[in-house]
Every structure is written in structure tokens, then in C-alpha cells.
Image (cartoon, rainbow, N blue to C red; front, side, top):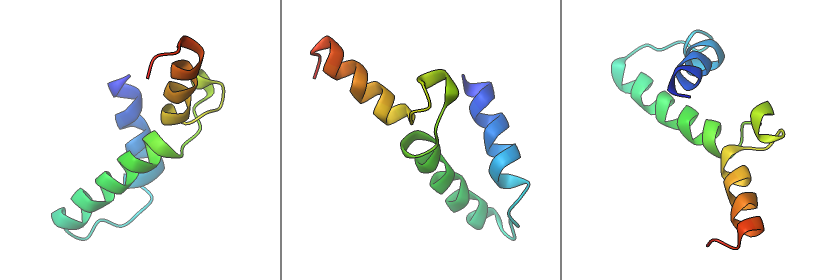
Length: 64
């Protein structure tokens, strides 16, 4: 799972956006992490974001 995240980070973000400073890169990685977990659709999750997938499991199981 971690390897997939870092592969996506490099492929989708780091290599496509200029990173002029280390501080800029840190901020960009934080933005990407929020995007990856809250918005990016994952085929392994039925084309849902991770947060939506987790929330759907909670609803089915009754776990809150």
C-alpha cells in the first residue's frame, strides 16, 4: 500500500510540478496526501476515495 502511494505521488505530482525549494515540496506533498485520501478515486475501492470507502464500511457494519 505504501509503495503504491509513493509511486502515485511521484508519477502524478512530483514529476509534473516544479519543486523550486524543499519547503515548497513539503507543502506540495501535504496537499497531495489530502487529495489522495479525500478526493482521488481508487479502483480497488470501487472507484471511491479512501475516506468515502472507509465511511461506507462503517455504515454497513454499524461501526462508528
